[in-house]
Length: 140
Image (cartoon, rainbow, N blue to C red; front, side, top):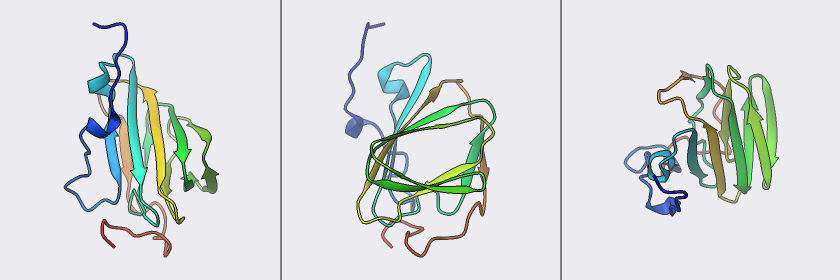
């Protein structure tokens, strides 16, 4: 294994490319050859609800979100916060969370966590009400 790896995130597969979800979800974990970390680039267009009203939590994983561009509306359990770049946000395991872009500028955010080699994520349907400021589907 190499001592380092450099990857262009735009060359990583966009898991949402053929879906109705607004934005991009590009996991770089495998292409970087990570054995301990998981890294994902998330791009959310202006006025888009990336998780489409849903949320999620992780049983074991502590996540670090690095907001590098734009402003997100983020929900952590029952608390809603506005988070503007540059910002680092740590979310503890078991904490329900979601995010959407209600603003006029696109958002770029990195999700970094410990790699488990398996999913420990639980989706929460109807986590919060649809935002009139954020499209629920691509192309709206």
